[in-house]
View 1 (cartoon, one colour):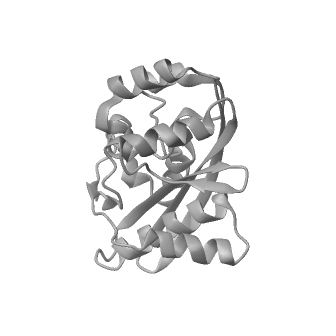
View 2 (tube, rainbow, N blue to C red):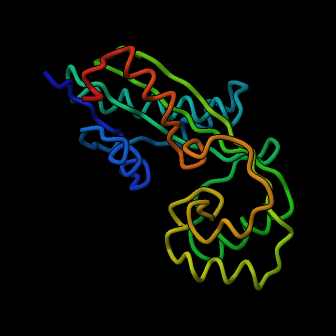
Length: 200
């Protein structure tokens, strides 16, 4: 019997990654005050990795309450520039400001992921990738934003590595799926261990 698998997210990218991997699942977004959870994690001495882990777990736990017996995948991503955390841009002007802030620097993307069934945390992990942006010109930046359109507003940092934004980068170190916000290989390994039926 196929175990019920639920992605606690409305992210089209995460959904596409699971679909491309051949998983059968449904989606159910969690309704959380993410900034409050982030503030609490930072106040407790946490960093970007900790925030990603906390948000992923809370998302999975939230959705699991309404879906008894289901394995719920919670995932979240944070962007760290030193000790500073960036969030999804509010509009094009904010995207410009974020890209200018990241220009010529190295930042880190932390992708947290958790599996929860009922009230039990079955597994969790955080993967980190390191990205270095070129010292691009304003014209190059604006050309990328024109080509990306509103899609960048759904991406922390104001860019999409899987889109035209790749032209703004000099170096990327880390797992591609982690950069997209869902560490797929560790997730699949965990599901094989916890309930192989979810992969059939």
